[in-house]
Length: 292
Image (cartoon, rainbow, N blue to C red; front, side):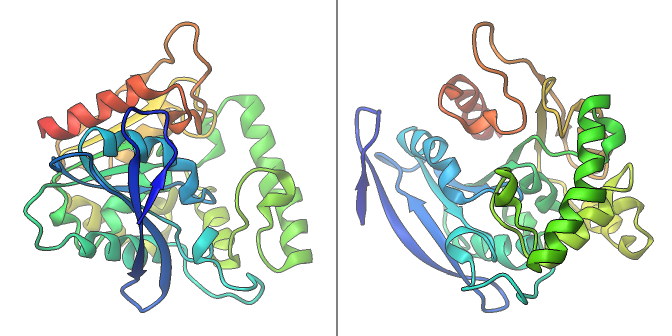
């Protein structure tokens, strides 16, 4: 067990977790131990191409507030990456049905409530979990449908250029989505790139894909209280995009607030929800989870 250097009064203890996905794939994960008596367990489900270390400050903050917090790298990312992504085969939705499902399994049988904080893909994943009924409450940020038509004109143009010109050339050269070349995130396996590109063509993401029609029933099965918050300045998942996706959780008690960065602070954008300086937002999230 390690002790992290922390800006908080008490240091946060962390422990590496040997997390094995439901299909046997070994994942890199980290448990942040609650300070004092634990109020609950919390899983941080990250965004596509974002390593678990990005969520460290939030995880430390939540641990200081009395939550055991688990972060993880999905297969193909960060500490869960193979020696080479070239030739590495996986399906995009394995991150939910195999990797995040194992994170939920890890807390099976514990008496404390199990909470969920999702970022982008982490909000998509709730409806894909085979064990979502174990969750007490979920709060997601920046989860949208991915279709460029929901974005501003400038962002839509940039996104279309990425999907039609830039990324296909990079993938053809590398054999995987070498996103790091553009400084936009961690490199992604070919299977993630192919599915993501396909579903971003549809206004309602994979719900409009005839090959994925079965997902409607999976999402309708979710009855856990959920918040899907997004910032009005989120370029990739503005409120309209969020609404286009979140409507699939039609049987869940659902709240969809639009966030505005406090005056004098940096924009949230798509990544700022978890950057240092967002502690007031984190406190709101943790209070809401406890209330449910």
